[in-house]
Picture 1 (cartoon, rainbow, N blue to C red):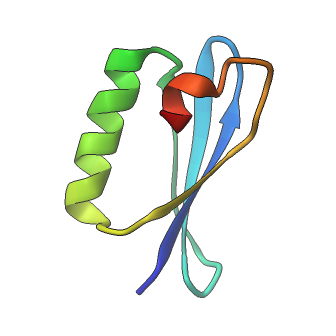
Picture 2: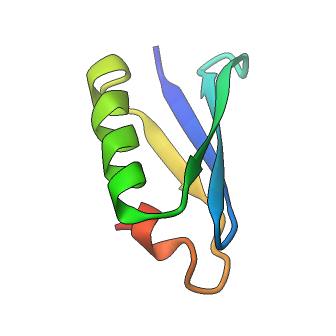
Length: 68
């Protein structure tokens, strides 16, 4: 099954939502918008949802850490 992450970006935090290929919300979460928190989140995500597609809101430069 396909999975998608939507990411709403702010200076301080990222609001995340995972949906499946049918459009059903699987979970939501918030993490700090800092490289260490983002790396930890993405590593845990890749083990559970390989091939997930991420959609990130471009907000100034605040989205760059997540996008990279």
